[in-house]
Image 1: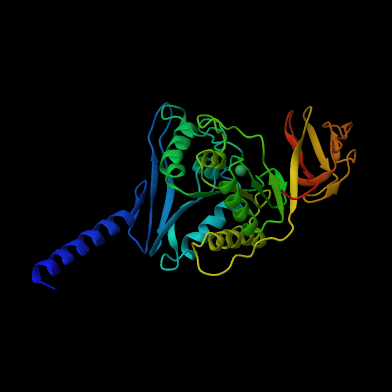
Image 2 (image 1 turned 90 degrees about the vertical axis):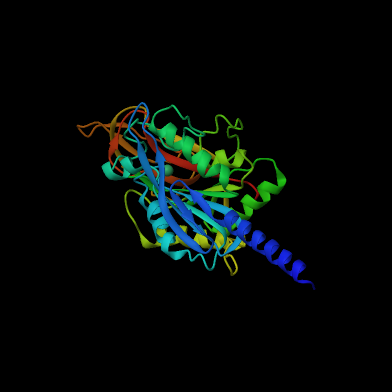
Length: 352
Ligand SMILES: [Zn+2]
């Protein structure tokens, strides 16, 4: 081999190496991680009609190149188990072991967390999982959703959205699987939800299909062709180790199924598939005395509890509109009109 061709090969090799490493460095917001590194930073949501906010983000850039998985939590900042699970995953994910890139967002709704306000962002009183794909000139929730769509949804290949029972919800763990009718995508999302391992899975059909009005985070990713699931564990402000472990171990198992971590996944066998949800709402204010617990199986017509006025007089005794499992039930005595008393899941007659 002549000296010239050796030199040419060396230059070529250096060029390829430098362009590869440039491609492999991964930035989300202010977090930039080189291959084999982990970086922290913020998604900076600029001020608009209301205040700015900074959403913490972590990039785990694997030593080996591959797909991008987004793990997003804390849209509801008092669903603590979902937030703590991502906090546990931040140190647990070793970039040397990871193939591809993991983007972790432990807490979208910081004001909800700090002020202990359930369900909404207290800055604009909006749920941070109802306004996707967001608006650059909207209120804080809409601007945050817009940035998350652009910086995370558009850049990932797979997405998991984490929730749980809020301060006033006694919830049994479950996952949502939203089939799109696109066979290849649905096969992967189904593999993800089975690998995650939660034993009750809601088949979430009839969701918005307009990319400009997708409402939910996982649906925003799903409509854009990225296999996505929702997972829920934890209840009523508690942080129980069993619940945290469900979400941490489920995530690791899903990453194994996606070949982003070495080892075998531990998919759930024969989960309970739920084909329909039935919300029971309060038709007026009162004091709630439940007769059922999270996870209780009920028959249609069974009494779910009692609602009294402030003098102890029974106003109404809500009954189960369908037969199924109590996915969550109001965890506190407070009730106002249209509050959710319970959410029942109707068991599917056959697995999808
Ligand atoms: Zn939630």
